[in-house]
Image (tube, rainbow, N blue to C red; front, top):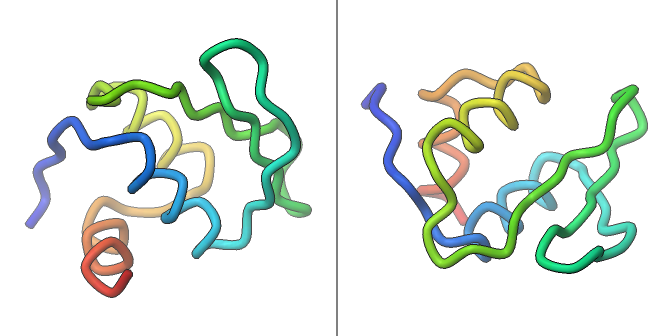
Length: 76
């Protein structure tokens, strides 16, 4: 399964926690997560449907493939 679809922000937040990110703060409708091996924070917008380009950018930033993303989401 290589395709991505828009997903709810809560699922994306559970994914971020599962890969080792911790919640830092929320500014308006954006939640900020941090992982120690990253140089930039992970920004998750609080949207009912987070667009695919945002999900893809988060995966690229975390260096996680779409297949691995689907596997982690399935195991949550």
